[in-house]
Structure formats: C-alpha cells, structure tokens
Image 1 (cartoon, rainbow, N blue to C red):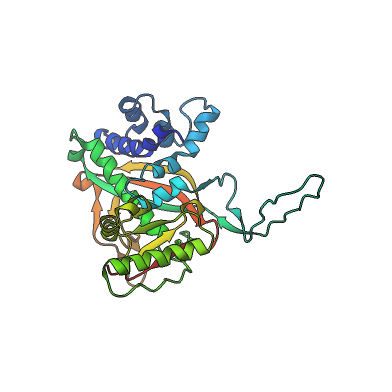
Image 2: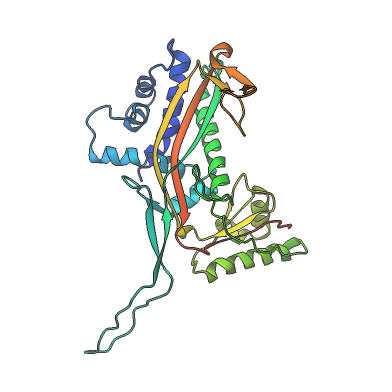
Length: 341
C-alpha cells in the first residue's frame, strides 16, 4: 500500500472546506486549492473530481480504488477497527455486489510418504462467509470561516476528521447490530456473550482474558487480540504489561465490554469516497437522529434545530465512504459484557 495516499482523503476534505471558505461561489475550486496546497499529490485531485485530471496509468487507477482503504489504514493509531483492516484480508468488490470467502471446516494436512508409495489425496471440507455489498457511512462536519484563517487549520481539520472516522468505525465493527439495508452486521451480531468472571481485581481480569482466548482458539484462531474500552485496555497494560501489544483500545464500546478476535480472520472491502463542501446549505443540526428539514403530513413536521450555513457564515463538509466487512469464519470473535476489574 502506498503510504502517501493515506493522507489523500483528509487532504481532499480540507481542500473542499478551504476552497468553499475562500471562494465567492458555492463550491469554489477545490481541485485548484489542492494543486497549490499539496503539489504532486495527484490522488487528492482525483478524489475531488471523481475522475481523472489527465491520462491515468494503471498504477493511478489502483491507487484511487484503494484510497478509502488506505485512509482507514492510516487511522490505526486511533481505531481498533482500522488496525483490524490493516491486518485483515482486503477484498475487491469491483463489478460485484458481494464475494464469498471460503474457509475450511476441517484439516487436511500433508503426510509423510515412502518411496514408490501412493500419495494420499486430501479433500477439503469448505464453507464460505460473504463480504458485501458495500454500505454507505457518511457524516457532515461544520466549521466557521474564521477557522479557515487559522495557521493551524489544516492539522486540526485533519485530526478531527480522523477522530470522527475512527470512532464511527469502532462502533460499527465491534457492535452487535444485525445486517440491514443500510449497514453491514457488527462482528458481535449473533454471538452470545460469555459470562464475566465475578470477584473483581486481577483474578477476574485473568479469568475473563483466559475464557475469551480459549473461546476463539478452540474455534481455530491462531492469533488473538483483545479489544476493549480505553479504561480497561489501560488496566490490562498496567497489570500485565507483557500483554500490551495484544490489547487494542476502542472508543464507543459499552463500558465493561471486552472482545477477543483473530485479526487474521477479518475481511473487508472499500469503495471510493465522495467529498463536497457548501456554505449555503441548510442543515438539521442533529448528530444522532437527523431528519429531512420538512416532512409533509397532518400536521407537517419541521426539523429543529436547523441552521443556514449562509446566514451564520459557516462551511459544511460532507464525506461519504463505501465499506463492508465480515469475519472469514464463525467462532473467531468472542466477547464479555459487564467486566468489572
């Protein structure tokens, strides 16, 4: 993976925001701003244009198709889900709605064979999981025009964007929500939680970690990482510093949730990214349950609070990603709720 393209999504969003802030028209010239601010970063311009600025090489086309995956991979310091994607199996859904991923339901090991003896024929017992179709994860951020004048605007904007994306990924991936028309299933969907060890303290922590690790290794995992809340992750690292490398904190998890997972059994797919900025939109300012600004009915419904970007001198930047994910085989993720140590 070309490390340089990990910055392209954040740069494209910042370019859209800055061009809208500085331009007298609705959208400004985001690609022009990107060309000046990030010379040599052609992928950022391609993202903003949703097409080519010139003849594309095969390498350019590959980089553009990998942009979302690269951006997510760059979130690894902030997101346990991003670390999973960096370790997991990337899947291409180009021209396909979904892809079946085979996994073995039994072993078929090679054996020793004497000279001139018949070689055993091994037959795999296979089943399959499925990744896809791609689902849309999106958000709108709002900043003031005065913010665009700050000499620190670029790093602050990019940091906030990365944190928002990291939090959203962790909540989605380590959730228990069933698959729907708008979202893939969380990895804990259909997984029965193990009982938490009672008693508290170091003994309870060790009991929980042993039970979780046993559950996934019995199912076939050869590598195990622990994903939990920042508080519990810090507790594990303080009490058992030798386990630090296998403990990944994740924001957005319920208090007391501890997840064990085989990172090599994770598969994901990503598509392109869509970025736009506006300083004349009217938005329903709700980050949990936004609705249409007005809905005809008896009586008519009007969303509140609503805010005009034009009237309040703000710039809204919208990002849309296409992502899907799944475990390659069942049983390779387990979790406990209500851990108390």
